[in-house]
Length: 183
Image (cartoon, rainbow, N blue to C red; front, top):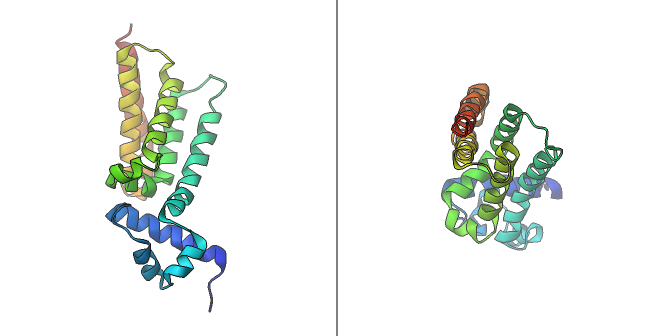
């Protein structure tokens, strides 16, 4: 039975993400992805003209979710616990792509993904401590966001969810400790 076009695209993205996360973007070929799916390379090219186009398709949901997350804090009145929890959820939801990034920073740096992630992290940092905070406050935000991201990405998703509240509380403590040095 032939696959539906949308199913094939989904399957391609799923396999690509798994291979990028395990082997790295650079070391994964489109041929490997096609073989894993038991389709021809031509069939894969029908859906994605290049590995970069496939990567962009994998990045789109993360970009959309991050922009939606940041847009929710545009009014300026935020609860840091909520911000950290929302960021944790975003990182868990996109942990496979973020793991692929960690496994192949050099190659994916050329895609703009590394710079984009750093830029969004900075935007969240600003949400938490403002545009020009004292260095200790900035350090608290960096530790809080970095810790949240690492826990969400490096743990198995189900395990990460089980420890979400503890991770948020620990990140909140880092944030508050950084702010306390300013007093």
